[in-house]
Length: 129
Image (cartoon, rainbow, N blue to C red; front, side):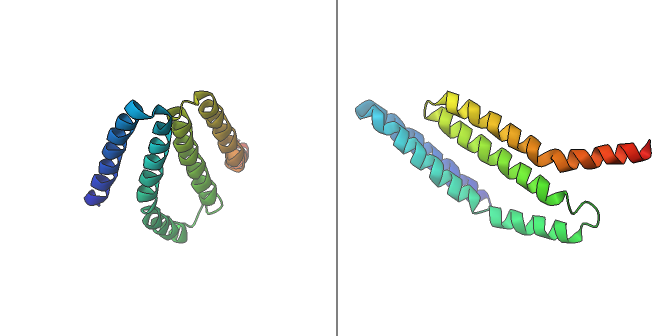
């Protein structure tokens, strides 16, 4: 596991150095180096998602209450991570306006996805009162 983070940090350091060197020669190509570095880092980190999903599947199989909410929580987490990752990528490319709007869209989608949980909470409160 530790070797994975060492690989990821090595890719990041090499990406920063190459981007710095290219910026001196051809600044317009810097964004491509940054994008390539980010994609490599993403795929190195995403390889661990299989283990995460196996863990979550085991939890889901053992949960007796709230099975309807579990997939919603997973979707919310996925939207949050993807939105954050892509927004940072936009900002790194100098498109902070697009990144900001993407963050807003992610928040709206998270709110939309969480409506069933909010309804269930309100129904529970209503039944107690």
